[in-house]
Image: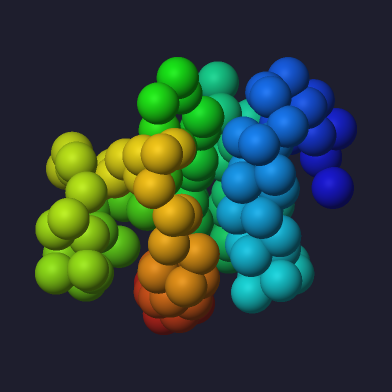
Length: 116
């Protein structure tokens, strides 16, 4: 595990740290050979040398970034959340959709395996 990512997660209040660690664990479980780093000031994951997903904590939400293709594939499930082109905001005052995050990570990993 990357120490910079560990430090990033540790700087948040315990309830937010718990959420970030869960997201991190999902990514590492699904893609054990992922490269973990800090990019754009947030935890970043690459698989097969290509971006997989990113996430970040903010005052009122968790930002999750799975590139436009990852969000397009799950647009119906993500439609209840505030979104950007390749981003979604999971409010901290709502249940974090870990199953959806897991499905997105699986999709993005499969996508990276098929791209050259």
